[in-house]
Image (cartoon, rainbow, N blue to C red; front, side, top):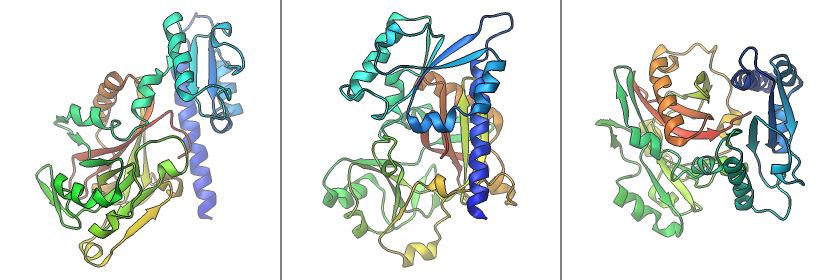
Length: 338
C-alpha cells in the first residue's frame, strides 16, 4: 500500500514539473511554434518526456526534437531552446564531460538567439556541495517574512583520521549542542558526498553521532550540521519566474536522549526516494505550514540571478520550534522523481 501511494505521488509530482516546464516554453500568441532540442539521459527521457507532456506541448505550439549525439550540434536544428541534462549514457564514448560542456558553451556563443537551459558552468556549480550553497549564504536573506540561511558545513577532501580535529577546529562539536543564528539546539553531523554526479551513491546521507564515528567516513564529503526540522522539508521548484512548493517527509528530529545513547554512523539511501508526500498529512501548523510565498519568490529571484539558472529546485527546512527561520540544505538542477 505504501509503495502504491509513493508511486502515485511521484507521478503527480512529475506532472507538476512537466506542466511548469511546458508553460515556461509556451510561445506568446501569434508567434511561430517553439522547437526544443533535448539532450537528456535515457532515464530522464523516460521520466520527463511523457506522452501527456508532449501532447500538452504540441497544443501550445511546442515541438520536442532529440539531439543526435553522433552529429555536430551546430549542424542540427534550428532550435529555439536547447534543454540538456546528460551523463555518460548520452555523450559519445570519445567525449569527456568537460568536452561535452565545451561543445554546449561554444554553441551558446555561436547561437546567441538560442536559449540554452542552462549554461553548463552554472550547472556545474550546483553539482559540487562545496559551492552549491555559497550563494544562499552570501545572500543572507532576511526580511519581515523570515530569514533564510544554510547550516554550517565543513568540506573534507581526504584523510578520514583528520576529520575529528577538523570538526573541533570548525566548532562543530559532537554530540554537544551548537549555536546557530543565536539559537541553541541539539545537533549531530550529517555527511554528504562532495560531488553530485547523478549516481545513487552521490545522494546517500550519513548521520554521525560521535567523534570516533567520524574517522570511518569516506572523503571527499561535506559535513553539515543537522538541524531539527520536525521531520518535514519543503521542495521548492523554480522554473523561470514560476515556483511550486510541495511538502515531503524527511529525517526525524534527533532528541537529547538519542544524542546521549547513540553512537556510530547511520547511513541512509537517497532520503527523498523513501519519502512520501506530506501535503495532506495532519501536521502541527508550526511544522507543516508552508514558508511565506513572498520570501520564496524573493529567494527564487535572487538565486536565479546569482546562480544563472532557470530550472532547479531547493530543499528547504524550517528550524523546529521557530516560525520564520529557514535553511536551504540542497539545490538540484532540473529535478525529476526524487
